[in-house]
Image (cartoon, rainbow, N blue to C red):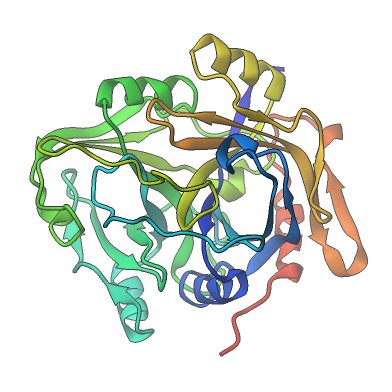
Length: 355
């Protein structure tokens, strides 16, 4: 079966306290639908955990308005480590996560009222689209961007899910090829070299960088394509300093953005394609993993600078946990989006933030 990419399933975020972080993301960004909440051993990630299995607790939370989710991830067998240096724009790895909103001005005022650390005013990208930056309590940067692509627009609030990431790279053209050929981000929205005004409030934002924003020309297909929606990837190469690896001397799962995950079908064909393109699977669950509340097949590859990209072929998801309603995805046409009524039924599992 040829590969099908449904969209960004989630961004992995290593944090020190899984429930505290989820409460914050729930309140401020509307991530109130837990697809799974599970404590277990990360036994297959040995290439990135010093060769030792590690205990962890993870929550995969979605925003039913539409967009990718957050895999909120906490080590329980060790204290998660922060970088020993200040991360700067252009450092190699995932530096910023994009969150979409239906109303940029209301989003700004809402987060400001909530006491969120506002990193910038509303500023403009090279294509004149408006956005702004904020930080969560753990120092992670988020870019709030305007979007018109929604699964369920009437969900309360102006925030949607993950709309993409900003990634530091060492070679723009090599990384463009990787994200285009394997992940379908084949269209350049803009590509410029400058000291950018909209970056000036970010750490390292006063350096000259080469910057390219990519989107996918083809609509995403597959079971969750309506919910996950379109996304973008922004690549940054710093021109006048030597960038550090964001996870230098640290483990996957330590503090920060640990991976970018795509929901896919056709894992065996994707494995062959990645190998042919010089990016072999570095981790492969080989068959269905069981998270108790969700199940599937997962694998990892590295981009040209070692940033981790995860693929998940979902086999089972909870629709309404209280009555034990789970959906088996292995028995349906992989190209077809799930009917809206099934995705809408997931609303019964939402958990609103409580002060």
